[in-house]
Image (cartoon, rainbow, N blue to C red; front, side, top):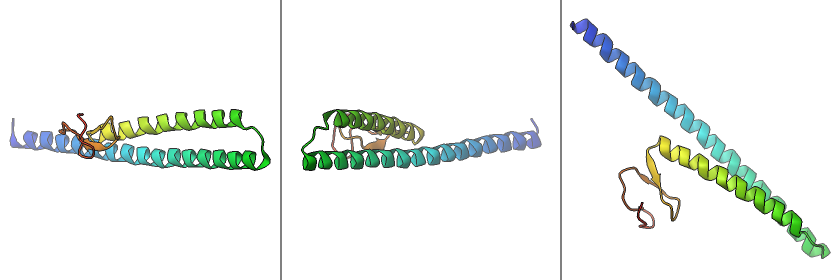
Length: 118
């Protein structure tokens, strides 16, 4: 191969690498926005739940069904948030601790926060 052909191959490889890194950065940003939006939904659900429970206590009424519905909705959102955070960790090449949800480097064997085995 001539040195020009070598240069072209190296330039293509560099371009592909930069393109992948840019794509990863865009995906990471989208996921972080999704985390923020999902956390906002969770916060709103908790606030609505709290207002309803307060009103029911004040009026001495039963809101058990409403509490169950909101609890289920919150659980679903927390599951979504966990999945999004897993995608972020995969993209960043990190391991999530099963005990405390802390993000650890991919090379870690034990959690840097709680010491649990990964």
